[in-house]
Length: 391
Image (cartoon, rainbow, N blue to C red; front, side, top):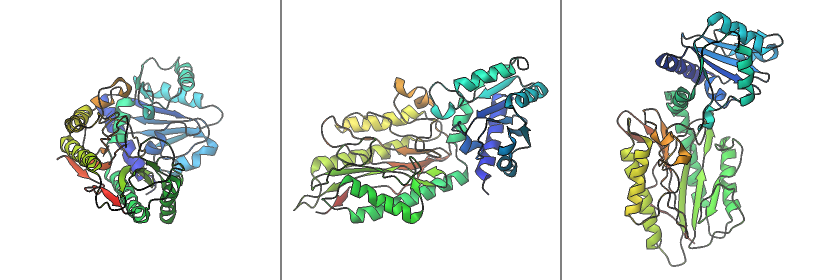
């Protein structure tokens, strides 16, 4: 069972190679340097290694003798070549024998998760194959993004488990929140609950605190700031369950003495964020481009008098919190081609149209959804009401 997902992903890769008429996909790595390896092979190697998937369905590995045991016992490969001293000679002999016309390599201009081949290793490869390969090197980006994006049922099950645990921990933390606590104290509540459940933070795969901060969202750890009545508190939390992650954010309001509800402008911000998530979810369906979904949420917030979203409405999750591929984002240069990608069944997205005024508190609600043939399924239980914490 250990390598079931890897086997499924390698079989997916064969289909994509056939669809693209690419003869061979070559993954070069040293010390596990390529970020696609946990998803595609799941095996570990210390020395230089090569993993090759052919459009005829055959899978091969090339590694040093000391790295071979794990790779052989995975039963993922039709043949494991153990090179005696130098990977290049083994690779050269393979290419000479099979004569591929096209070889896909992991390089990309914009997508870091598809850019695992270093410049040095690329130059080395060209030198090794200069006398035996006269074909074309192409980027694996298009099908590697699909391999990450389109989840198998087992991958979806693991994401669902991560989400269940995340929401369980949120409920425990909400019950303990009180004015007078620091961001760090609140962050430690999450760590305690992760320890109990033997899981880790999905962002860095350690027992680290999530984002916990007063008023303004930023990618920083919790600090010494004390929460007081009248504050908004933002929490953005991810759990790793067996290699797959959640990504859920919540904002809560600390009531002032005598208050029974949040001030009107804070309630309006929550209502706008909630409505924008609903609108984006309704627009998210197979065949649309990512930017179209973003535009729906963006325009709704603007019509409600909220500031324009300063980032994407949503991103994919899976092996990583930001799992690459199609982005529910605006057509800005910094996002490259990701917002133009098509939405497909099996993708899992966040929906997080954040309200981020220049002066004043940030408001974020973030849900996780699965794209189905008919539309979407909310994997996270929606936050339908503003969470209020009594003084």
